[in-house]
Length: 449
Ligand code: ADP
Image 1: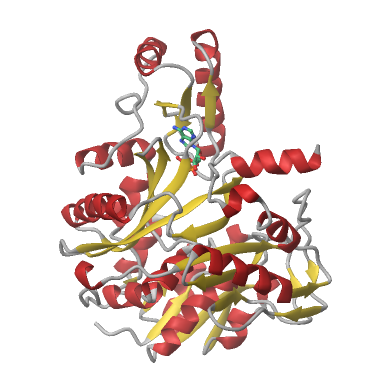
Image 2: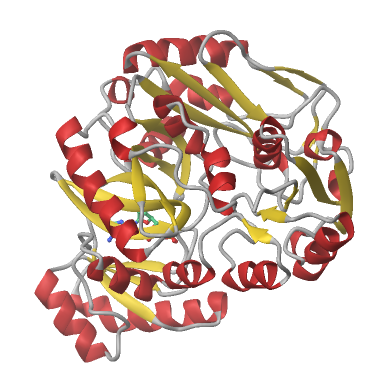
């Protein structure tokens, strides 16, 4: 069924990103927004706008009843959830479909399976993905925990089945600490997620975070769009992402890519997804799957030439994948810097009025942002205000262009993370592509120390 009017259940740069793809396909857009976002760019550019509640996300962007009502009132025939908010809420996806509105996302059962980490690991194992060694599903007892830990070797990691955003995890250095830390993890998981299910995994000392972008048509056909390296993280939040990864060879990409696309085909997966791995000593270890569009999807768009949101919309319309695996070419190199309204070194949020704004431009420079001069950044939401995505034929060329583009960005009135990115691009380890998931925090600690 062709989509004619799309409701975008999100805000900020991603709402704009989706609006742009929709308009390029001749689809009208409906923005929903909180009272804090009345003057936001995604609201200004959309064809229709509906206020769905007060500033707190729980009363607006997470308010299922208000969003469904907005869809009914505006006559929207599809909903795109973006990332975050309701994007991985299986119940919401079911409600949308029950209202005969096209859900631009995976089948609700796949969102549910992958949202439960124990279920996700079991599914990944059955689909032939390599796992981090660990307990076989949920931990039943302390004895079992001891046995598993002794088998895989300390340190181990205890994780909450319902955890997310890096929360609900603890490193257990030795057997002495095991009992205390497992019970602490259980009570914290219960308090944070209402579920005290935990499991154990080998703690990898110094891995990279490498994820594969996948797409399925829901009928057993699937492709992969290569990998992204997202190892530069602070408190499990990605800061800068690149594609391809500086450490993955074309042969390795093809080998793992085939494994992940076969897994998605076998599952009958529909739409966009990301399979996240830790990578150490040449081995991949599955950690989780995100059943949605990712923040860092533009680096994949840059090296494949494919519009991922357009692809998502087409699949929701029941169309086949627009490209076959053999037709896909990975060319050049792309890097994304996440620009946040925060102090570049203390990371304290810095909301407020942007007195002056000028975006970088020029060849192969893309800025995804809802900023404009005079815009007031509300204090209620995520601090990311822009993404700068730069493409080059080589990694070196890409970095040179990125430095040039960062230098052109003007965001006045609030503090931003631009100076941090500029300093990062001068680091020999970064220039050599020689970093792991621990590198950024160690670098920041050294600079602060
Ligand atoms: P969440 O859903 O909370 O983000 P993930 O399983 O994706 O949880 O893990 C988040 C981050 O925690 C990873 O990107 C990695 O930095 C770290 N991590 C997860 N599992 C392990 C492990 N087995 N060993 C070492 N680090 C890990």
